[in-house]
Length: 177
Image (cartoon, rainbow, N blue to C red):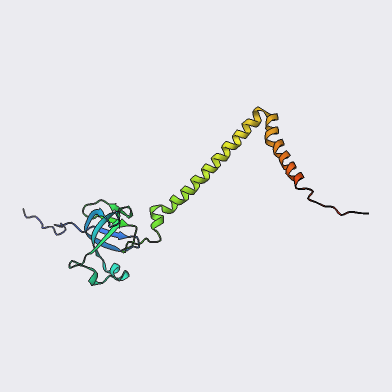
């Protein structure tokens, strides 16, 4: 029995792809975990940029090595795998080719939401403190009304009247004959 020869079987895997936040892509020839000169955890990579990326970011032949690769480093927190398929791996980088943030970086990584959540948490803490203070005053008024009126209403009013008396009359009426 003669079998048909298959043409769709690859002997070597496809290079993984790296998609940048600005939409351009590059093939990853090498990807190694490491530390940058400043001590950040980074992916040290050799990438082969596609023609559109080279044109958009003005990457010349002098920037590449003999294999057409460029060495780059990106912080780990700015890179995520989009799929884990060993035959066609794709990574997403929240930066552009030069490692600069793009307008969508803060949105995509949730930085803007983080600031908003922190502001809302601060407001919640203030409102909880106000509620606790109001409940305390309510309980005080409910248990001993006379004491509450004396301490919370009468004494502040007396202080206000005393301060007003010290400052003298505020309105001077004209003298009539």
